[in-house]
View (spheres, rainbow, N blue to C red):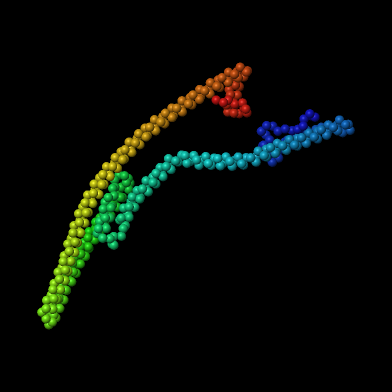
Length: 359
């Protein structure tokens, strides 16, 4: 009894449960009190007094021991929130990264799909830009240029699900532009005819004015009448000539415009055919290239898997040989197979301190 310092000790693994439970230390403290109160000292003798003093010091040692265990457990407990928070953050990031990794094919597909639809919407926007254009202030030639521009838009299976929608929009726009162009051309011809009529009227009015002036000139003498007639004749001929030139120009402009429309339609159709053939050739080439890449990637993946399997087998064989060699050495030192295998497992997993097996 007098040889020990701590009068009580905690059983392995029981201290935490005792300290974290209200009144959990009562068994230990009661045992300490029981031990302390079970002895009777003879304080009339020096040895008795020394024995009692020594026992008091043992109680102090027990107090220090209990306090030390409690502080150690408290210190370890304070680390728990930090460890929990650290693991929580690590788990959060791990799950986020895992989610991003797993969803990457979907994310890539979504991004590619968005790019694809944006490209189609942009192409549709070009059609709508023409179809929504204000035409009232444009000439027949300007409307014709818009018609040629939209007729040059090639719509094929490359438009995918937008193909039918684009065809409808183009056809509707073409019909609108054709009607607008023809209406504008008729208005321009009517305007030219009205201009010609106006000039002819001016000639008639000038002639009538000349007749009036001629009658008035009769009283002024023959010579003056001749001069005025000459002036009227020259003016009338000039106006008639200008009106005829304007009419001829309007007719020629209409013919030139119709010829240009026919020519440009033919060129647009030929270009559309060429672009359709070139597009199909590109699609076929891309498909062939994609198939070749798929085969190459598949062969590379098979080779990688085979190489990885070979390395795993070689590594397993290497570890097995080392483990067998160590097993033999431990057997030679008196350990049986079960003990030797347990030592090898602990050393391989670095659970024996500085004693490890490096493969």
